[in-house]
Amino acid sequence: MKSLNLESSKVSKKKSKGTPISGKKYLKKGLEPVKAKKYLGQHFLKDEEVARRLAETLTLSTYRHVIEIGPGTGMLTKYLLQQEMELIAMELDSESVIYLRHSFTLEHSGLPGSNHFQIVEANFLTFDLKTLFGSTPFAIIGNFPYNISSQIVFKLLEYRQQVPEFSGMFQKEVALRICAKEGNKVYGILSVLVQAFYTASYLFTVPPEVFEPVPKVESGVLQLKRRDDFRLECDEILFFRLVKTAFNHRRKTLRNSLRPLDLSEFLRERPIFNKRPEQLSVSEFIQLTLDIEQDLS
Image 1 (cartoon, rainbow, N blue to C red):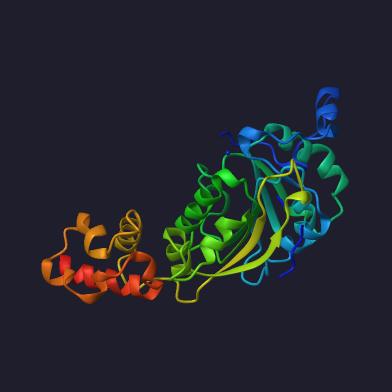
Image 2: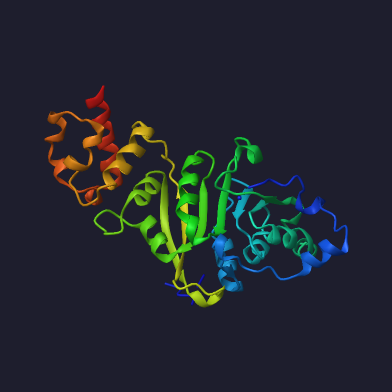
């Protein structure tokens, strides 16, 4: 996705190391270059240094299992495999899957992580991750397609109790939005929900020229580390509903945007309801959730 500025579907029953190269057809396909597909939003990373830096954002401090979303041609994958981890590369594109299972696996079979490397042909957004890991902790990493990057983050939040770390390449504007603080014009639903459970850090900007095909925008790498106190004191379902309802009409004051919650007039007269949602910190949203719980009880 981008000049370095230093500031899916069906699940295959075959696994990478257990899949034989059984014929000329598959050997030929496995050796052919993988073509980026516009409908999948693919922009293959081709810069070794960017791939290395992204791979090194994972600490592996409290986990060994990692999911890479959308490995494509394996540029990031090979740097992940240089570390001692149990890596699952989840890919929707069948052409990439064939390449990764054949020529890529043969070429990188000697890397430290290759003994515990699997390739799963699936759509990450619809896949039940508990079928892979049960309740075991795991991290998520990837060079994410722009068109589904926000959906990937929302799915991360569903598995927050199991995911202590998350690193990824996003469209720069989306990465900045996730890391934004209150008062910033891009501060929104993703900012609040992610930062309630994770510490979000924008690491570096990546220019368009290091991708194939070249996108029209810059990319940004961010890192999320789960907070020690990631379990909220308030009702988490109500918290999610509150945040989404408030930002559905972000230009309105909370007094107007939160009408669907059917709050009492007594509560709605508090000074905080004169604010717009982008003015509230994460902690203020949590406290407001507690107040609404009491109001609704």
